Image 1: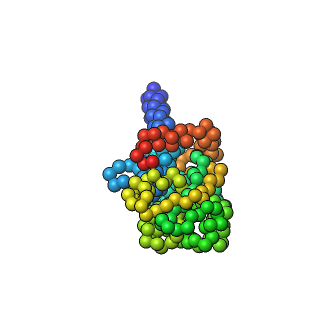
Image 2: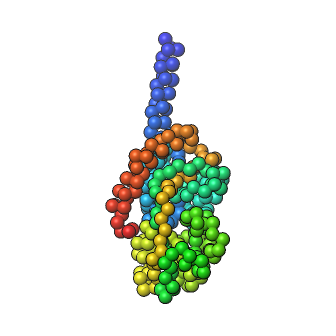
Image 3: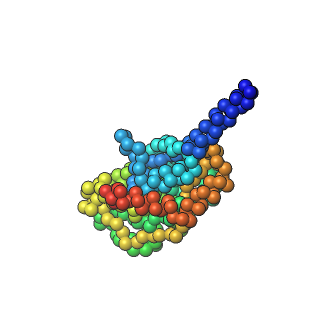
Length: 255
């Protein structure tokens, strides 16, 4: 009788542990930098943003708790992803070199890219107008294939969008490339935007997905096959875009 009672107690404990594992299978460590409206960092609040909304859904679907590691820039996040110091980074474009250290899982379509400069600079009306200009780009960021691989373009590396805009205002380069969705928050950050800067007629949009990058050294308690199934289904059902659209409605001040 004692032995059966002990077995019953052990089974009860096992069931209790199983119930906890359903609530959370582990922790999903995510690296984020400040890049409104995709990722917004502040000293007195948890990160918010379009990518953050998608990451929260990802963690929920994978039954993991979410842990944020903040970084000064995107390049540092990719370095942490490569080393397995974080499990996930959101906002990647599919490039062959990134397959060496990450699995790519799609969650939303890409944004349209625009070009800004100081007022008075000649209007950029087509792609060829970029050739004779120096262009500010974010370190480790991919834009679109023609732009990324064009050896004629003179690119100036920057760490983040704010420092890049400051450099543009100081005439450190001629033009800055950025996602169109960033413009409203940039104008809010720089009240002098309309007086000093201009958005050029030429824009570019490539039909392709943006990905979660999952480190090949990730420490999450779930197989890649299961992740691909769960995230793939949510992507096909546009659940991540629904979260992004809801975020936009609730944070219209960022736009």
